[in-house]
Length: 212
Image (cartoon, rainbow, N blue to C red; front, top):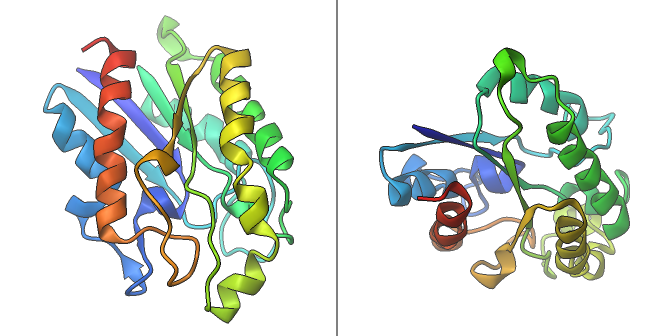
């Protein structure tokens, strides 16, 4: 049995902008990926609305700093064969960080935590797939537009920055924008069709990285 951990934010949790609420279990991308890979691969969804790469949200109702919670999550689910990290969207909020380079720095820290984690029972560190989330887009929703002010342009830089980071750190890389686009409803999230497409899009590279 191979184990894949999907570490992300609301795009991984399955936030449904049309609800608002949560997509059906079978429509969330980790569920689609699990179904595509079959019963020999255990796909663990670890999505949290509002999670950042490594920055505090002091107004949040729980700890959304991905760096702070990551070691506990890694230890909870070990042994792991592959960790998929898709974060950075919430870093685009001006109140959080507001820049793509800040998200890159946070992603670098997350990869480093995997590589240097104190794995128990002589377990090896898993492979890492760095994913750039689909860029933000303009929206008529006044709350989301204000919350992510300036984020559309910054988010379009993530793919290039993450690709270079993955090359430098010996990780896999996947550009989620190659198969999915955010909805104009709020400019941030994915509708059911696009989150399903993302799960399908991951299958080839995950199979390659797992060697199956």
